[in-house]
Image (cartoon, rainbow, N blue to C red; front, side):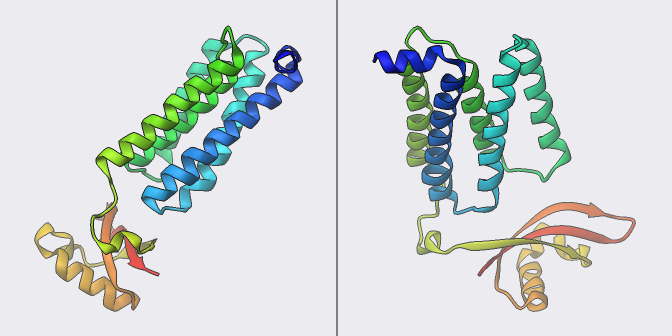
Length: 205
């Protein structure tokens, strides 16, 4: 216990110790919960690096006690990510906000007992995510949940097939053109001046 107190009292060792805790928690959340239930690999890199960078930014700002600036900056980052980059599903946004929250808590929170406090708070976050995934069980109940789906973005010129009642024709047409069995299509945006749409298509790799 004495060694842990020495680590916490030394700024450098304290920062490194909290960073290791943050990385461990991110691994559990992203690799063993998020990826297990979504099978989406594309966001893992972004989540990991974002969590680490936010942790480091908060640590540096904490040293000059700009805590209000940290909060405002994080909301600004969150807004930019939401409206200027690829649109994320509500579920992915939840995991993104969780990653941000974990990084902020581990970098700025002060506890009477630092070790016990970090373990308790991070355990609550991990357990809540795991239990929610179990309860809502976002994975399909069929064998298809074992199949990994790849996704890509395509520009599509037949806007008439975007009607909800013609989804079957839409999947068939895109499957024929791409030579892949398209399982699902997500509309990202429509350019009426050019007469094309940007679609996110999911297919078996």
